[in-house]
Each structure stands twice: as C-alpha cells, then as structure tokens.
Length: 193
Image 1 (cartoon, helix red, strand yellow):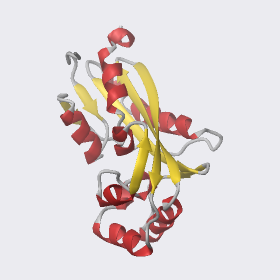
Image 2 (cartoon, rainbow, N blue to C red):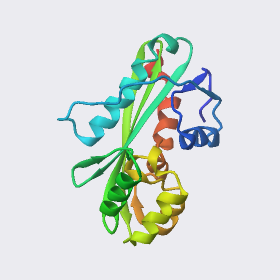
Image 3 (spheres, rainbow, N blue to C red):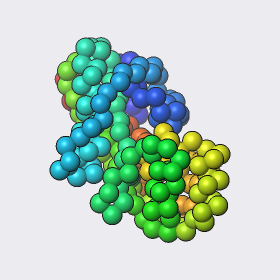
C-alpha cells in the first residue's frame, strides 16, 4: 500500500487527471505553468508523449524541492499520424471521421520530478471505434467539449459510451493518466533517494 509522504503537485488543468488522482485517494494541489508543447518531428508517438511530459516537468525545476511534481501528456496516433487537440469544430469533425470505424493508439507520457530527479514512463492503449454517422459526430462536437482532448474525444464522454467497441490496455490511460503505472511509480521510492 502506498503511503503518501510527500506533497504532490499536479501540473495539469485536465479535469480528468484531477478526478483520477482524487479517486486514487492522493492529496495534491494543482499548479499550472504555460509550456510550449512542440516536439522534434522524428520522434515516435510514445517518445513524443514522454518528451512533452518531461518538458512540462522541467518548467517546475524550482518547485520540485520537497514535493513530487506530476506532469503528463496524452496523444492519439492514427496510421502514424499524431492527432493532438483540435483547433476548431471543423478540425474535430475531421479527426472523428478518421477514427470512425477504425482503431488507433492512445499514448500517455508521465513524468515525476522531485528535488531535481526525474522518473518518466508511458503507457499505450489500443482503442477500437464503431462507425459513427455524421449526425453522431456533429452531436458530440456540439454538446461536448472535444477541443481540449487529444483526438477530439473523451472516452468517459457520450462518444465513449456509444462508439468505443473495445480497448486493449488501460482505460485510465485513454482518460489521460495511466493510474496503475503511476501508483507503482509513486510506491517505488528508490528513485527519490
């Protein structure tokens, strides 16, 4: 059983990540800093997610004394194409049309930082979508907020309930934080020494 000894700072405005940490019974506070999320083009999807999570963590170097900083980044990969957050409703429609009736991968990179030491990892989940009608896609975009989600959807939303046929891997990873791997990393305090 993980016994929390250090304060945790979650460097994410994602309500899903905040909900997941709360559900894990972790005490944390949210601190935000703006970070450029660009990355080198030659990186593979898993490397991109970790690269951006580490970039976010480095913005908190001064704040990691006495606390564990948790940063994360989630990306969707479809046929080698990276689908980040959509720019507008038209872009969201394009993304969801691509994902309709196919499968894609969701990668979340996570970094834990404490006193200048960093531990990073990632998780991958394969997500299989049923075919969505144009009306279903429009309904989702109009009634939910796909603009703040990689791949233009949230698995915990209406679209996840009606469109996700199956997943292979972690459900919470698709939500934006692989909680099982995070719990293990927090419980293994060897990297803190």
